Length: 290
Ligand SMILES: Nc1nc2c(ncn2[C@@H]2O[C@H](COP(=O)(O)OP(=O)(O)O)[C@@H](O)[C@H]2O)c(=O)[nH]1
Ligand SMILES: [Mg+2]
Image 1: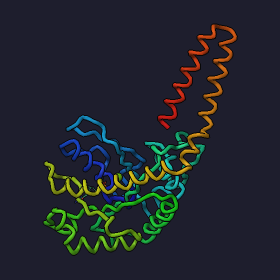
Image 2 (image 1 turned 45 degrees about the vertical axis):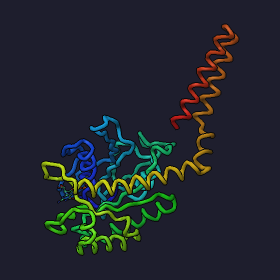
Image 3 (image 1 turned 90 degrees about the vertical axis):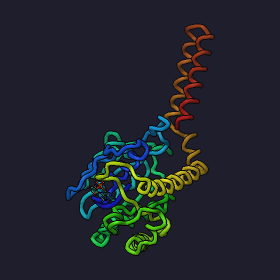
Image 4 (image 1 turned 60 degrees about the vertical axis):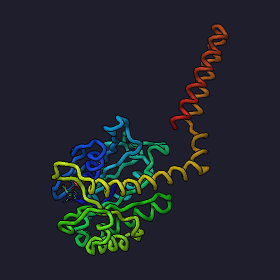
């Protein structure tokens, strides 16, 4: 999730967490300070209290994009490619480099970003400075080249229209919300269908179906795009070639065979044979998880 500070990125993580936990909780840091309350890149996983199972998606919260602060364009490209570790603290004056500790050198499909969610406060769109739009448009160009899909979340619809009825069709009929959807769509060149108006939980005491429905519709769209992206990547030769040529994999096979050969010279052949079987099993597990 990427967007200006105060847009409601961290609150969206909390909203999704609340829905699946069946109570309002504030796990990710959200706040109303002038600069970003979220300082780090955080990956959030969720668990459904109904099924007790972990949900098969991850939301990644970033610090806000500002004119002069926030992740710079190098950081953002590394972020898309999955090179940035969970918990990394962005420093605009010194972007991450491959020499930094924790830098993920060979990210697999699991680490890559599958869908970028641009988050905007719908009630303050007019106040977003042009350089912030420029930064986001630059990121969009890089995403297009990589085939990464995108969705826009338009938050705080309750502040755009007081007493708004969060019923799905009514939200889309509301003139103020329609205009905001049009504006973001024009500024980023994204289809209006991919701009999802929502309201996050903030000071509510109880969950509301109407709030949940909008957030879940948005999540559904994100997961659909993410799924498509993953399928496309799996189908490309690039991913398969990377798996075959992984140097760690080759080194591990050679080391296993050498150890087994040495052992067969000094000990029983059966033991060496057993070791080879163990090495082969280890390789299979390695392939499975990469
Ligand atoms: N009224 C209203 N406030 C919201 C909504 N989403 C977030 N907020 C508030 O906006 C402020 C900034 O939210 P936060 O999630 O920290 O923004 P972030 O900087 O993008 O992570 C917090 O005070 C939130 O409670 C919303 O949908 N409606
Ligand atoms: Mg935040």
